[in-house]
Image (cartoon, rainbow, N blue to C red; front, side, top):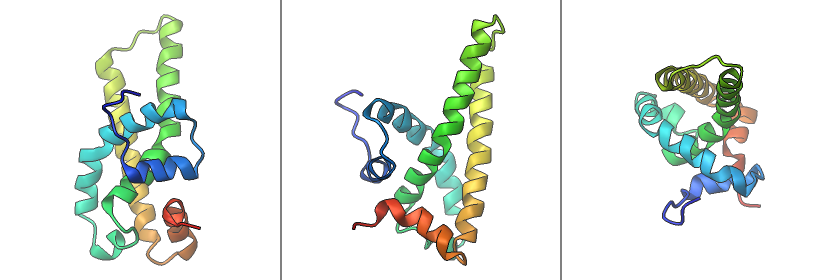
Length: 133
């Protein structure tokens, strides 16, 4: 990872909590950056009771980033495997698939955030990386 790119504190907390290998930090940071605008837009439209589940947007942003890392890696691996088989997909197609993945992931995480208002175990899942022991 470039020395000029600082990983946000909340994302670093999630990565440390989930014991993410150093080699994966740059990929997670890329997802974090890509999610910023659409996730902020979705967050800003939520009722305050849902937003209050987390201490900040940045915490939610970090949790969503980690949650979408697996599906993002799977999608990119699938595209690479298809290209190796000679099934070319354009960069625009790959971008469209990523945008769809992010959109669906954001919807799912917003839905879970709303559920967490009344579900203590789900709320604890969201907040676990940020609790100091």
